Length: 214
Ligand code: C5P
Image 1 (cartoon, helix red, strand yellow):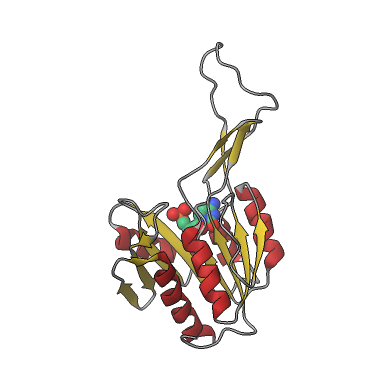
Image 2 (cartoon, rainbow, N blue to C red):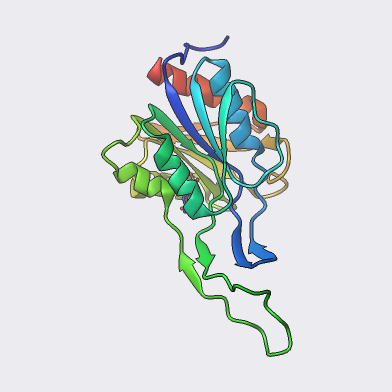
């Protein structure tokens, strides 16, 4: 076992995409595979943490020792997160849809012109968590960016009121792949990490978390 033990600590992890229904057969989704979030949940459980993994629609196996709550939409993900509190730490890895659609009750038909999607904002789970009275002591967000990755993540860390942001360079083949390029943005500076297997990113992040919470 690497780093300190996280036994007696509860960590909330979100992972995967959300699906936002348009009608009974269609939805809006994104390319998140859930691999990085599931690897983080696994690494935290290996260090002895009690882990609640709120997972969007993915088919990955549940890591050993992890309590998994499956959800579909962003609003369901938010409700599952609130139900999992209190937590000592939250690692919000999910690629949450920014909007949902007021869904049609019947399948939309072609013929009458293209339907307009009535997009409405989803809750920003991470920002709401940061503002709650029962905010976890260590709150960690992800920032998937394709350009100016660290600069945007530093701005996001302050704006969202979180402790750390994992700046995630998703240019190239990161989404769905087994390796990742991330940098750990904290108030006192940024750690540049080389390209690593997602499992190794998870272990390093768990080490950093254990150094704070153990
Ligand atoms: O603002 P942006 O979507 O880039 O922020 C990404 C971070 O916020 C990630 O940690 C993601 O899990 C979280 N997030 C969230 N709820 C949303 C949007 C993003 O928790 N509706």
